[in-house]
Image 1: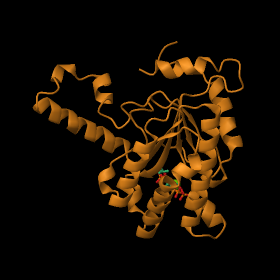
Image 2: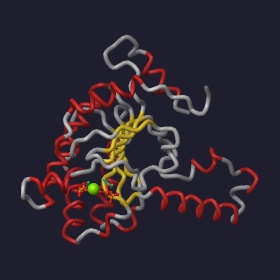
Image 3: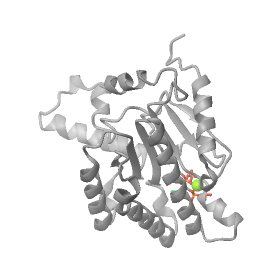
Length: 249
Ligand code: IPE
Ligand code: IPE
Ligand code: MG
């Protein structure tokens, strides 16, 4: 299914960015600690983090990475104070609203994974608008995970499959990994090759549980607002040297 992307990649042979991951996913952690260190409100950390995101997106789009997923808001992040949730949602709204101007000429396609029902109508509409507007773009796929939880996604997929079996749209005996995957939010997105979590925390926090079965992980000791292109280059360099065995020898 994703052969065409790899075909594109072959043309890069011999260049500096040889052996790039097809899909990079990031857990951008440490905004709050960044702000605390500066005696600023946590929201200032989130704003700084949003700027980091812009820089990273520009860089990855420029070097020809095809998929970039950013964990913007987890299903567990609703437990944060109301004001902080509101500020995170506002930053997302702002990012999407300015996307056209910011990403002008970059050919980036924006999409969103996660459960949208709990998002404000305003944000839901903005998501639909941007997805539609960038649908035909063939450059970097910029995927925002918003109100996303790996367990929620898997449970939802199971429920949808059960519904289809009940309706006679799906046969019980036909269910396998491929069919299961087609019920996930990421059904037309390849699994991440590289997952980067900043800030020194070494856990997945419910991010792409199914999809990261064979991903490589990197945990740079830097808070997300301080994550510069240099750190991304380091992670890519490290990725190059990893031997992926996928259970083989
Ligand atoms: C991650 O930074 C931002 C999101 C949840 C979107 P945090 O807000 O978790 O920052 P720390 O972990 O408190 O430093
Ligand atoms: C993971 O970071 C979620 C996002 C970055 C959106 P958290 O800061 O919420 O994760 P925990 O609570 O430290 O596991
Ligand atoms: Mg955190």
